[in-house]
Length: 348
Image (cartoon, rainbow, N blue to C red; front, side, top):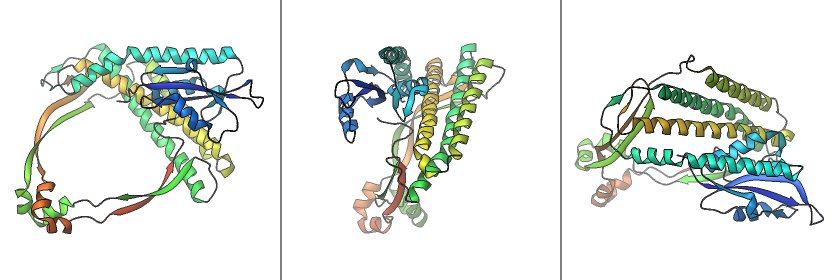
């Protein structure tokens, strides 16, 4: 679950006179293992103006990823570029801080829901199916909608990402938008090939392994008659994603790379919000399942301890070291191009 706590920060910058503050504000986040002041120092590198952060401009919150995405969406008209926004008056900034605090309060109210879902995750189901309530049907529809939006966002991002990568490969400077590198994957024992060549010897090294199994899945399909408002919101978001994607595809000029990054960020934020909605709806259905296997015509949540045979690679390598080496796959080195400032989860 992405119910990760952290901090939302509102970084200001000083004007060249070293006294006044500019109207530019960076709205970003850190997860619980970092502090906003650490992030401030990182942002300061390469910035000609002094950046300023105070305790009053830091909002601790649960589900920090979702809170940041919601704020970026709310203040999209104020966006200058990326995560920088313009607030021309102190009252505008105070309102943004109040919104952040309000969202943090909403997230804290959901903590018990996620804690219960996590507790039930390690509780065996009893095999029983309960009848669905009207609330269950509404929540299931919310979950279907959220899953559909996540899929649409991922699909919409692909042409933009490919265009940025293509621009990078052509030698055009895309700033920090992308970087290339190599990664080497270590040698791995080819278990499938060994099993094919020596099936009897393979069986000698099979041992029973106990592992916890849990799987949640929906049974029902979206019924458009369930709730008009739910599908109106879905269609509006889908239309917005289509608009952003069309705008991005038309931006074929390398000089517009920053614009592409901003459009990719917009879709990423919609995806983060949809993923959050998906997790909330799923947690609610898990709560409704309780210790039961599922809800009739809605969902099933299988949870049990399972025993299965696994190949004991450690014992085999000690007893037959030369044979083990013969079945090691060669290390593989791959070249990659990675987008660096827009991710499914930013960690700014």
